[in-house]
Length: 143
Image (cartoon, rainbow, N blue to C red):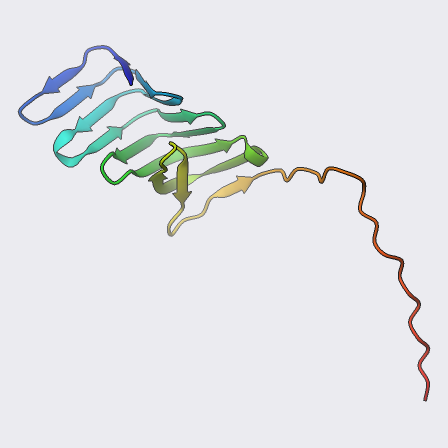
């Protein structure tokens, strides 16, 4: 793991870490950036109060504010959020998403009690074009 920040304040007694400056952290291919950072060790909670951005290969989440509980893996993103996924070129935006960070770092999200707008493209079917079987003429009606 790697953490890059300036003017970091650590309170050992309270188990908090804070910076009001932009930061960047990554673990493997998972990367987190923000305009500021608050870590509450007693609550197992990371708060990115401004400019939150979570990236992993094929997936990017950006929002005004994000929280992550590293014990439960619960994630919440609020305000002007956008989720981009390379799979099917998915683009989702809305006011709030809640979810979990999966075992491989993927985001598993829902929008409880709210609405989101999603766009995506379904890939065209590969191979020869499908041909429907020829239609049979209906039998004439006999009385």
